[in-house]
Image (cartoon, rainbow, N blue to C red; front, top):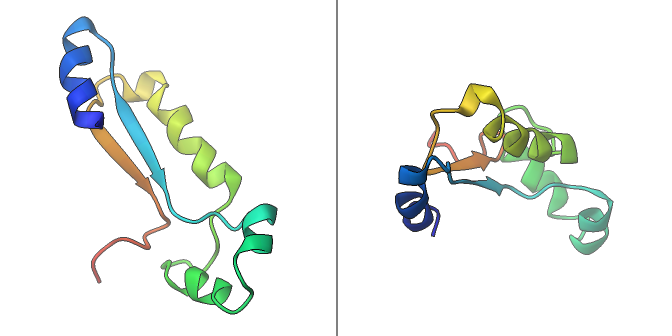
Length: 86
């Protein structure tokens, strides 16, 4: 969907991107995800820590900043490296 909308919007100088966060172990997720798999989620990231709201929030803040003025048609994976090939 990001690519389709970007293809239509970019010619009008509207940059379209999306953010795809990995599981963020915030309070509600900690209550919903059983205790047993939570350490496994953390071990899946190179820095061995859970994602935070701040981690997830900084991505869209960057995408709307002047520094991202030439970024379009991107799905930004906010996963702490959990999705990279090793």
